[in-house]
Length: 326
Image 1 (cartoon, rainbow, N blue to C red):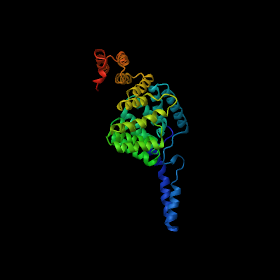
Image 2: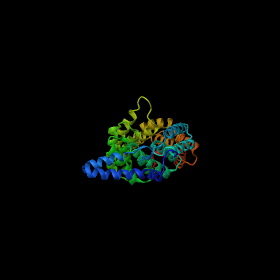
Image 3: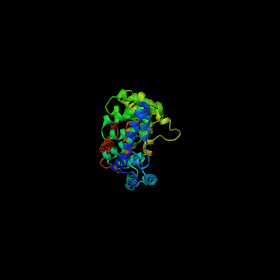
Image 4: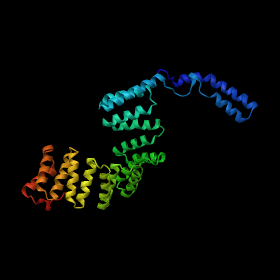
């Protein structure tokens, strides 16, 4: 950058001053204690003007970089990731020590599918931020998505060391352990996350999933009941309603499962949810409703194997619910 002086130039500038410092130290050593000598040398070493040993970006460049970051964020909100990335990259050139440029640029790279590059930028953002816990968690999430479980766990632990009330860090730690199959340890982490953020549906779904895997269907449903109720009187998100419906289905409460899955299907265009609804309707004894839902799936995805199998079975034998297994 224009107003940053290369190391070689600074060393040339420092040479006469360092010689003077040495002479000062020798003089002080003859007439004072070693403590006084250290004090005098320390004061003489304080940065001064162009001879500062640190790099200092020009104020105008800092302002320009901030303006570019602002323009990048606007482009990001408008879905123009390519333009956003260009703005953030330009901001980094002007002010490479600003962690905001790097973390925003990392997110753009991540959405573009450039995972390793995103991780590199986020790693530098973490360093420049002084190990900000939120950035540590985000870096850990990226590593986990890329399959680097060990790194993800390490970053989760570092974030917890710096801020042990951070729900996101406990959730990340739980996600790593859950993926590794360490269910009870993961459950403990998720409970810690819920202690600091009680109404987090993502964590509630994870907890319910673990209870289901541990053959505790009633506890799984209890967690999901609470997850649905917290959104009352409005509808819960489709992902919560889907898991709620599946929990009811696992307990043989098919008509209630239909209600939850129907509500989920209304809030989503995902054909897989409609297929789950078709299954629930069939198990509840509503063959016509099940056939209709299966045909809806096939209209969206004619190659959906489950829907084709279900629709054919229902057409040939309406009582197929008694023999249906998946």
